[in-house]
Structures are given as structure tokens and as C-alpha cells.
Length: 178
Image (cartoon, rainbow, N blue to C red; front, side):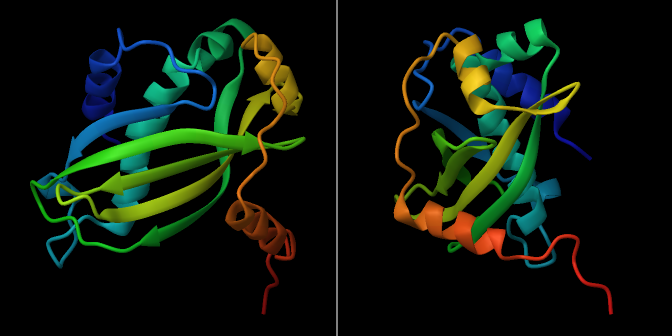
């Protein structure tokens, strides 16, 4: 089940956090709860993706995107992700989550998120391809940024992000059926 109560809690916690620039980093803290674990008593890989929502949505609020979405009747969607899992997160462990927009192109926005344990080790890292959607489909990021009052050009994406985008562009869609 989606962690609605935890999302409401995060939105409540950060309701008065100072606004962030569009590429600012939102930092939040989360616990691995018993219903987040798998058979090996560690944070389930699928649940990790759900918990990353708890950082992205407050980030969207702090940069002003939630207000723009409401005014324009737009929505948010994820169009792809690449994740690395490197350290176990056990039940009741606390992690620090860092969430930020790293850039955009003509269609998509690219977000980076990571979780860090108490000893400062990165437990997981994800690159998301996200989009704002409207009645006609994907809203160009430049239009979204203009609605946010942003005029800056897209920052250069890191080499590793550009390599993932290029690799993903070679992937067939729809997938082949055998």
C-alpha cells in the first residue's frame, strides 16, 4: 500500500521549509519500517522506489512546482529510472534522502535522488526521467520553467546521465514479444 500517512507527514514537516531554487537539493529523513522490509529483513527494492516519492513531492513543493501544477491542471509522471543499490538498510534504520533536479532537455526533467546511512555511506542512488503532463500530453520543460518564473538555461547534464539517456534511446519500444 502507498505510504499516504508518511507522505502527509513529510509535506507537513516541510510546509514551512524555505523555498529552493529549481536545482536546489531537498534533504529529508526517513526510517525503514517493518512493512518496508523483504524476506531478508532489509529495505525492499520496490519499496525503495516508493520511498523516493517522499523526497520528490516535497522537493516539488519547495521549488514551487506543486502550485503551478494546481493552477495549470497539470500532473507529474515518471518516464524512466535507473537505480543502484549498494548498502543494506535494515528495519528501523534511519536514512538521509537527498533529492534534486539535475537538468532537463526538450521533453523531460532529470532528477537525482540518493539515500545515505548514519555512517555516511550511500545506500542507493537513482536517476529519474520525469515529465509534467497536461491535456495534450507532455508539457515541455521550458514551459514548466516559465510558469515557475525561471529563465535559466538547462544546466549541462553529467556525463553519466547523458550516457544513460543515450543507452535508453537504443532500447526498443514496445519490447519485442517472443
